[in-house]
Length: 271
Image (cartoon, rainbow, N blue to C red; front, side, top):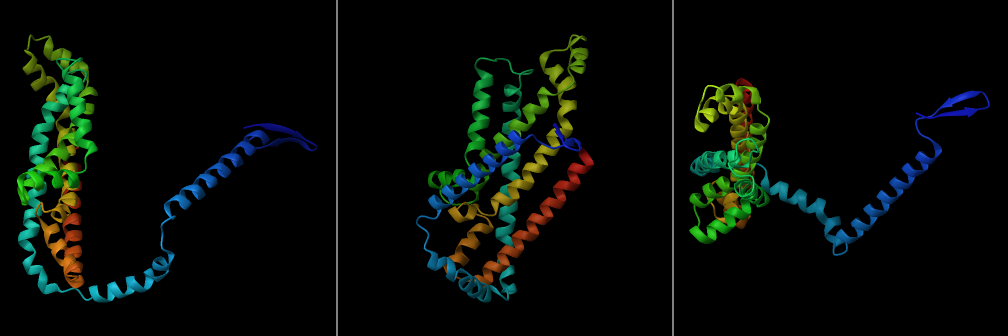
C-alpha cells in the first residue's frame, strides 16, 4: 500500500496514481471488448421478436398452466428408464474408468511413455464430447432405445471418474505403500493393500457424485432417441402439449432433487 506525502503529512492510498490509471484503462478495455462482442452476437437479432417475447412467454405459460396431472401416470415407465440409464451407465463407466485411472497416475502406471499418454488421451476424449453427442452418434449406430443412452452415459463418465480418481491416486501417502512393499508383497498386493484403502472413500464419493450428474444428463437423452423421459418430453413438445410439458418438468425436478439428496447423504456418510 503506497504512502504519499501530502501537505498535512503522509496520506495512505490503496494504489498509486499509476496503478489507478492502469486499473481504469483495464476497465475501459473490458467495456470495449464487451461492446464489440455484443455487436457481433446481436448482428442478426430480430429486435421485433425480442420486443414481442414477454407477450409470447405469457401466452405459453397460460397454455402450460394448470398442469395436466393425469398425464403423470404415463410417465413412470419412462422415468424408470431414465434412472436405469443413469445407474447402469454410471456403473459401466466406473468399471471402465478404474483401470484407466491406474494407467494415468504417475505412481501406478507401468509405462510413462506409452500407457500413461494413452490413458490421458482416453480421459480427455471422454470429457471433450458431451453425453448428448455420444447419444446422437450411438442412436445412429445402434438405433433408438435405452441401450444407446446407457453407453452414452458410460462413455461420458469414464473421463470424469478417471480424471478425479487418478488425481486421488497420485495424492496418496507413499509411506503406506513403502511399508507394504517392505513386506515383499507383489505389485497387485501393493495396490490392494497400500493404495486401494486410501482412495476408497474418494472413489465412492466420485462415483455417487457422477451418478447424480448422470441423472440430470439422462433426462434429455430422449431428445435424440436414446430413451427415457426425454422421449416423452420430445413427443409433448412436437404436439405443443404444454400442460404435459409442465408435468414432465415437475417430475424431472423432483427426480433431480431426490438424486441430489441421495448423493449428498451417501457422500456425507462415506467421506
